[in-house]
Amino acid sequence: MLPPVLPNFTATIKTGKIQLDWITGFMEVKEIGVQRSLDSVLNFNTIGYASYPTQTRNAYIDSKPLPGSNYYRLFILFNNGRYVYSKVMLALPDSTIKADMKLQYADIKEASRALKPTTGTGKPTTTEQENKEPEKVMWRPSNYIYTTADGNVNIKLADAQHKKYSVKFYEPNGSFLFEIEHVKAASLILEKAIFLHAGWFNFELFEDGKLKEKWNFFIPLNYRM
Figure 1 (cartoon, rainbow, N blue to C red):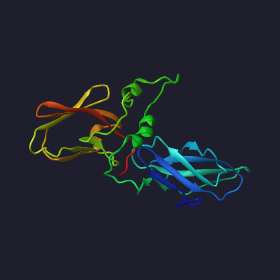
Figure 2: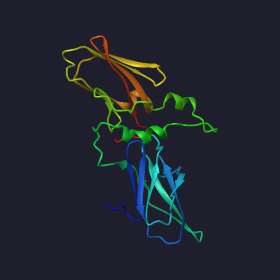
Figure 3: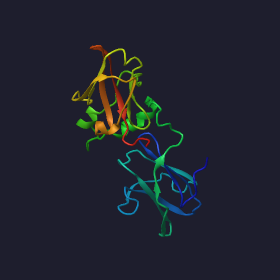
Figure 4: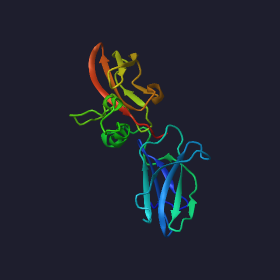
């Protein structure tokens, strides 16, 4: 399906990013700036530029969207110095993504990298070191505790009514967050807001007092609503 023609465009929420797509019929375009705001009226700031502004079909990826609603508009500058603005578009969820779909490594890889700040020297910051994705072993989601495309944490324990399960959650640096002392339902969904921020989290799942699984999950910054 082709994207709309300017001044219309689409802004689609993916996992951990927002993708803008458009087709332009304008000639002699010098640059196309991408501007973002949280209120759709004021405070639009330029966050980047189209890599190939003269290209007919174009796209831009916002890999660090803001929490909440993200509004976008395009600033189109022509070679003669004149300019126009596109319409303002609100980023909407990707209708092809199911909100209850389990996030796989391919879904979170780019989102995870987008959360890694660096110092002016290019070296990892303390935050990056604490929030880095698992290394050595190819990451895969747990079959018991995992995030879905809506950003929520799902706990699936088919025999929860017959055994005693408990779960402890931790920050990547090992700091304890909270514990569910007894998971009584076979299916439990934890609202992403409970975890206060996006990124990696560790957990320990216990079955009748014995460690059953020790693993992690990732909550993207911008999830499908």
